[in-house]
Image (cartoon, rainbow, N blue to C red; front, side, top):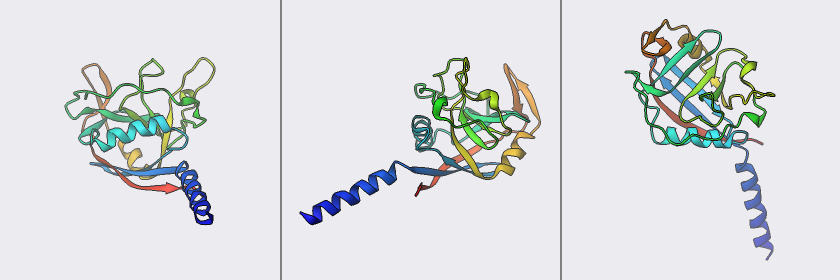
Length: 189
């Protein structure tokens, strides 16, 4: 009986620690690599959604199709021909998770409908307080941050842009996402 109690206690410790595990990933682009940490514990819906796209290799070959200096870079929905990829169903907006749209954070892109995010995400290149949830503003859900490669993000946002069809701020030279891969899952202590 004593061994079983220890075993259950250890199992509970493991389960508690797993609830606080964040995931490190690397976004490989044709301009360099960007390492990110996903907030599994604070944005579980958005992170699960993002990981689902990563695991299916959906992002491989997509581009950062919208880059605006002083604002953000957006990707994860179009191929290099500006053809939009078919996505999974939209997810619930987690902008009430307390995370802020500050420089270097990743957030889910969406339409004007709060619960319309699918595959597209953006990386804030400035503190964008107006994207945070507030009275009368549903906000944009932050779900991760850049841990290494912010210089690559800055390089991407300085790419000369053009209008392609109805899309503005499209880089003239495609900024491709070659792949996104998990590096490791961290356990917070």
